[in-house]
Image (cartoon, rainbow, N blue to C red; front, side, top):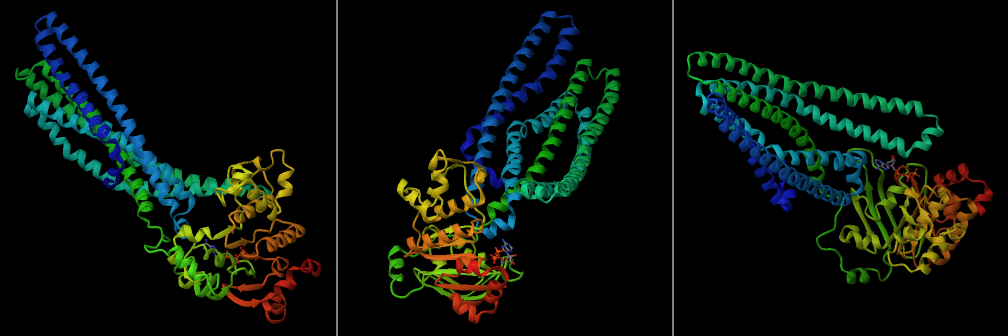
Length: 583
Ligand SMILES: Nc1ncnc2c1ncn2[C@@H]1O[C@H](COP(=O)(O)OP(=O)(O)OP(=O)(O)O)[C@@H](O)[C@H]1O
């Protein structure tokens, strides 16, 4: 947890002054029982009302001063802990943003959300408690023991004897509770996963009448979490009563021994009352300490989960010596392929099955290439390697004759416009969303991109046209409208390579054909990769790559493949009527 101290650096003042003010309060609190003893022995005992008033007033002043110090400490603690939480959250967010797809897959989105919210909150609370109580509680414990020793050393020994028993209880509880806290956080991740799947897939769940089954799934995950929480609670709940038992046992022993001392006149009544006050202070401080220990055990689990994220180096990052623009320009001359796959293999799981095996293909500048194959045959994986969303396990992928790993990621991705399979838009206007592809695009460029993407017609029917708002994720648009906007977003920046990953699946045949025609006319210098399951979408491409079980099983034009590739013929036979092919 010490590693996180760096996030408190900007709050040095608060972290130092906060506990100091709490210390002032603790010192004042420690003096009170001795003052009560003096008041009883010298004031009440001797009937000196003036002395009683004097001491009473002094005690009142000390209480007010203590209260003020406590308030200042609370203020500093809130400032430092909130600032700590914000900086940590921002750092995590920045770090997670650099993650590759593979890194994101490793943690899973729900777990990352839990870590950046729940776990950071846990640490934030721990920081606030650290400033407020971590010095105060042990100080009160030790201070009260010292003050009791000053009052009567033999009686204080009873308190000291109770200490190892308390330490043993703490040790047992912490060793038992720690693994359970880790388990608890994992179960919380599971709940987040079920919840996010349910909320994002609510339409599908309803359409398939799966609400009952999903409710059972959620209840099971929720019960599982509850059971773990109860196990954690049972163990943690032992701590306070066990502490109370030991300390109350010590109080009984002190009262008994103290009574004997009073009989023999070696202890005054005021002293025994002060003694009991000190024991109560110790007891309260010990309860705080035990709760702090529970809190810090939880925080340690959260800290480990956060550290795991921060320690994960982005598996895809910029090279130390990226290619210069000059090198890039020189490499483009001659007959260098725009994209080249040289014996590339790739698997999502290092030990698992390969999603791409020994892929060899060259795609030349300006070519329109269709990519076709059955579901799960590796089409999306193939195109996802080009913007370096994933790195090849074997072989090498090149763009303009340069290994992808030698590009600056930003430089590489600026060359590529990608339309993902799942059309996702962001809150804002239609124009804002299209400008994601080119921040400084003029209104004309935005309109032109929309026209190429066949989106102009539906946009012109909207009252606010390009300023029409898009709600979260593009919920207020149809699937086809969203797809057309994502296409406009990809082409507005006039990329050198345009990848359309099955992005016309929600378009009708006429719109799909119009889109392809308009792309052909407006992207003569662009290299276009058209992933599709429909033969009609790719049949006019300069060449078509056929995938089957992660391997390329055919490359050629539609006519060549119709006579040479069995897989292509089979796809063609199985899915399309002659009219569709001819469109
Ligand atoms: N993120 C992932 N993690 C693990 N395996 C994956 C992941 N994405 C895809 N796969 C697996 O890789 C293989 C190829 O998937 P890919 O998405 O490339 O196929 P596809 O041809 O694009 O299919 P579709 O046309 O259905 O989109 C499949 O077996 C799939 O299960």
